[in-house]
Length: 293
Image (cartoon, rainbow, N blue to C red; front, side, top):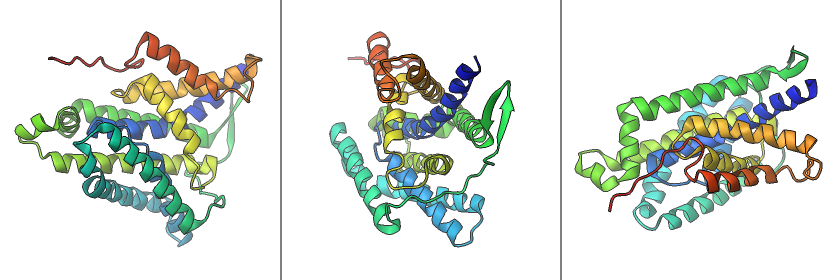
């Protein structure tokens, strides 16, 4: 039983890493209607900025705050001068552009700071505590709690604020939103900026656990996309729960399902996606979309 609980706790910690990136993907989709594959690259770039600032003697918390501000500005500029050219065209073209942007950002980060592993300082202590015979690191607890706070704030933003409702209206139908008097261009910039800022938070939480490299979020991005599909593109709570489910199930499958083991545990989220898409295509917590014709 102790081993089982330990696997569950470790899975929740790993799932929190996936959830951090998944929340940023949900935010940019809620604000623009696009799946942003560049989100991982923006998060990595923000983490490098925070790491560079700490090396210049800036306190860690201030460095992270400055990287969040930098990311917000960068996200807004990317929307204004790059993505806006494609947002009103074929959505598939815009998605391909975000993939290209991911490649570009990763290359720039490697060019500026090399591809060597760098140690990113952690906001939380590396000590472990024992609960019910299970060892849990304070860093894992802190990361999970931070993700829960971000999830609640994001849910509140889209469900209970004028800004959130305006962002959703622009994402669903920008033409109607414009006719209603909403500043569509500015709202799209704000949406991309908020998503990039959230990516900066994700990068700061994840980098201490993975070590900082230009490609540190490549694998996590795959799991984050799986969490988004499972949880539903319209539900911040859903993607966090889905990310935790993925983290826990892949840990349990690796140990208790013989033919999967640690080599094939990467297949677990894809099996879950296959099942969920058949049973509930909008995701476990997503809303059905009704189109009137």
